[in-house]
Structure formats: structure tokens, C-alpha cells
Amino acid sequence: MIERKDVPVFTLHPGRIPLLVSIPHLGTCIPEDIASTMTDVASQTDDCDWHLDRLYSFAKHLGASIITPSYARYVIDLNRPPDDANLYPGQDTTGLVPVDTFDRKPLYLDGQLPGRPEISRRRDIYWKPYHEALVGELAALKQQHGVVLLWEAHSIRSQVPRLFDGILPDFNFGTAGGGSAVPGLAEEMAKIVEDYGSYSVVANGRFRGGYITREYGRPHEGIHAIQLELAQRTYMDEDFPYAYDNSRAALIEPLLERLVSRAVEAVRGTNR
Image (cartoon, rainbow, N blue to C red; front, side):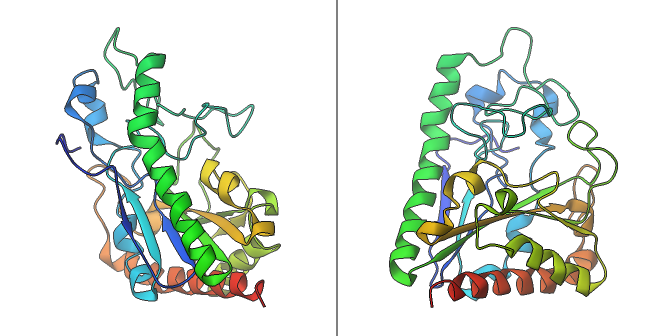
């Protein structure tokens, strides 16, 4: 966790191809005024999607636009709807402003839970600017290329009993059950992973796509969105301090680049 003032809400690197890579859970910053209300466990930002900017560094060389936040999902979760509706009805999930970790450890001191005015304040300061920039970049790329792919990059520990049973597959592709992208895209991505032979994979399983994928994936308008929830064991240590594993990452990076490149090709093909 970084407790600094005046850090940017997000960073947007503009690209030159019809691809926007969004990494909404990359941030680790928690402002001092919020941190003062939180427990010590919050300072570890355990539920961060660690190191994905590093793992996806190839995307910049491909010519992708890339948007990343500075602030932690413990401040506000950018992949939740602004009204905090449950994306997976009947299943336990963390909310727009999480009050506990994936392991159900409390994030706030007694009597310090954020109320509606505080949640609204955070939505205005941290949530809205990220989404406005994301929408603006999608529109710019769509205007330039006719179509655009939004690649939602996520990662998670391979075992989180609160969210899913057992061990999560290595690759979890989601297109909102096929509704957020060109038909069959998630299944094609899964087939590439299967043929690669080293990793387990599922399409539109437990993680079918969060708010960003579902809200902005509009293939009938030329905007295609796919989410990849990657098991962190494939590229890093899943225990604190969550170190990047160069040897594991070196094996998975070429596959990720192949997947992203092929997905862009598939989306481009819809514009011919």
C-alpha cells in the first residue's frame, strides 16, 4: 500500500491498434484519510491483481492502449456497477466499496465503515474518472478503426473458498455468456490454451465477466469485450509478499500475447 497524496486516479497509454487493455484491480494506493479508518490487514492490499502491468508489457509493443488505476480495489472496486448490484446473484461477492477481504477479514476499524455519503464521494473521485476515460478511449479507437476489442485483464489466487469451490482453472475467459463479444470468442481462446497443453482453461464458467465486460461489450456496435481471470499461480507466488516469478511468467507471456493478438484479429474480421 502507498499512502500518498496527488497520485493520478488512472494512467492511460494511448495505442495505435483497435485494442484497449484494462487492468482495473492493479492499484495499490490508499489515501491517508481512508487508510486511517482501516485495519492493518488493508495495508497489504491482498486482493490486488498483482503484477499484471508487467505480465502484459507485450501489449504496449503490440500497439495497444492500456488503462490502469493507481488506487486499490479496497478504496473502490472499478469492476462493480455504480449502484453496487450483485453481478452473481445468489453467490457471495465483495461490493463496490469492499468492507472485508476475500478471506472475510475486516477492512475497517469498529465504527468506521463507510456510509452512503462516503461511498458516493469515492464513486465521484475514483470510479467515474476511470470509466469516463475507458469509454472515451473505446470511442476513439472505434472511430479510428471501425471496431475495437476491450481486453479485461484480471488475476486471482487459485483457491478462494468464498468465491469458488476447489482450485480455479488457470485461464478463465468470460464474454457474459457470449453476449459481450463476437460469438465464440471465449471458446476460441479456450481452444488455443487447450492446444498449448500446459494449462487448464474454461470459457464462461465461474467468471463470465464483471461490470466492465458486461456494460461496455456491445458487439452489435463494434465494441467487443472479453475478460481473462488468470490464476496467479501461473506467474507469481500467491503468498505474501506476492513476488513475481520470472520463470513461470516467461512461460505464460508468449501464450498471452498469442491470445490477445488472435482476439484482435477476430474482432477485426467482423469489420470486413
